[in-house]
Length: 118
Image 1 (cartoon, helix red, strand yellow):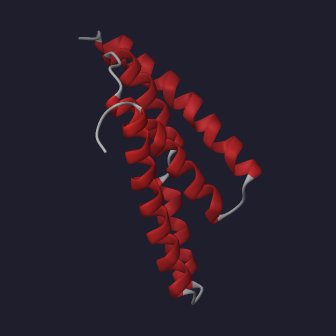
Image 2 (image 1 turned 30 degrees about the vertical axis):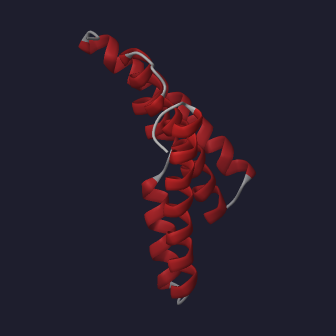
């Protein structure tokens, strides 16, 4: 088991890297597409980590820290609600369905590549 201080530092360092990565993607891809991209990429990485035999330190850094900060449920929620509030209910529903489907599919691909689930 990892020392609580070391565990916190690993999560913090991974989270810092994930947040920077999320911001970098947002600079390259705007709007709803960036939300789908980071959620799918983060889910792909998380699926691979889930299936791969990594230690607790790597899990804390990469899965909890990096993937937790890289993916963005809050932006997903804001984009969905604001799109619906703008009178684009069908677009909001498509966005929500695409985001969830892409994240789940990416997770399964990552897990399959990592040698696990699928």
